[in-house]
Image 1 (tube, helix red, strand yellow):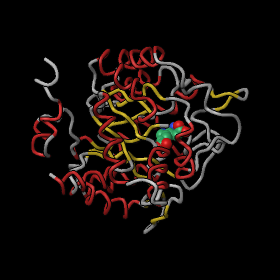
Image 2 (cartoon, rainbow, N blue to C red):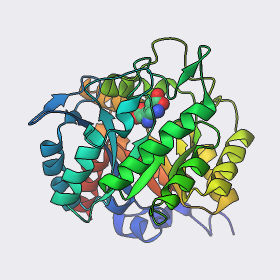
Image 3 (cartoon, helix red, strand yellow):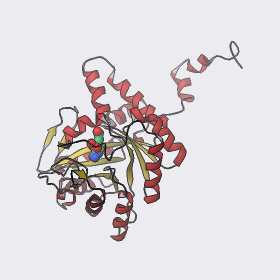
Image 4 (tube, protein in one colour):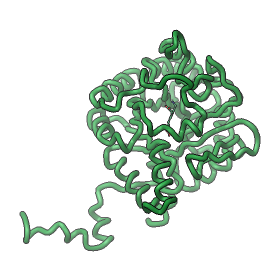
Length: 326
Ligand code: PBG
């Protein structure tokens, strides 16, 4: 049936009709908020490149958790900024490290909020790489042990889920094995399965102080030109026991999100990274775009592409806006 019998515009006439036929809608329950945990007390240190975001000490993290829960956001993702870094990244599994303390504080203040932890070495190593260095390169197999220890220490502190982001081969299996052997067989793994080597991580590296002091991450993170390889990464992680698979970044990789969802049928997370947030914030501050509308459109596109959940620095603002306009 075509024009003039059929007119696409009939169902676009007003918001009520548009709403009836809308295929994708965002809910606060789709969102996960990343938070940066640091040491000390009463610390709330602004992150310059990410307006509205702070490095928080455990006491302030607990306060933040309550607000996040009240907005209907189901989960947070924790990153750590330790007091000291060393070549071996030992701070990653310190039972009194900033992430471990934040987990305890958040679970005390808001037990229903799901606490997911980023598992990686880059925030804890003096050289800023995601693993242990041997012969000027990140040694895959040596790093696995560190990651498994880190994941275990998060689980012991009370984390509900762990999310390895390092891109070492075999890490999901190594973490699964260690968690299972220590009584944590019910803790799910959200793997950063298809994580690209991306310039969109720029602001985060300032936030977490984790820029590599030499070289780059191209030897372990994925090449942006590849799509079939993303599926191989994802299937390997699934075979090793991943419960949720992630694509990261989100906006420049919507095609990957769609393929991963269609070809695996697994729960898919998409990480809308720091650069995606900062670009919108900067353009909005300059008055060049309507920040709220761009934020919602961007998040909607990620869900429409196939993501079941979105990790985003906009989680609070988006959740509030969804609730306001419902
Ligand atoms: C740690 C990690 C990074 C991000 C999440 N986990 C940085 C990186 O790989 O360089 C980036 C998150 C963001 O940009 O928002 N490996």
